[in-house]
Amino acid sequence: QVQLVESGGGLVQAGKSLRLSCTASCTASGSIGGIHVMGWYRQAPGQQRDLVATITSRGSTNYANSVKGRFTISRDHAKNTVNLQMHSLEPEDTAVYYCNALLQLSGDLTWSNYWGQGTQVTVSS
Image (cartoon, rainbow, N blue to C red):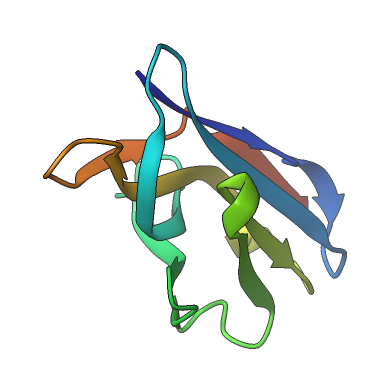
């Protein structure tokens, strides 16, 4: 019912930049009432899925230590979109990046967690 669509992944050289975007929407009748937190996680081959960055509805951000100073997360509340601007990319940033949203559908009393399908980011040395 809720769909998170990511875009912006790809292959880049070390030191370059990429921008990821993710938009949340309802695929059936209904609408999103509110999104508390949106964020990005990543999973490298053979590794667990780890937090990259999150941003709350009030704009509070949280970053993994490994990306602080290089990545910036932002939100467009009107478009239910979260962006991740990545600078100074390193080969260690290579992973599948997943969008995440903790949101409430209109008329619902509960908050639910949703994931996107993932987008590949590959950084060559």
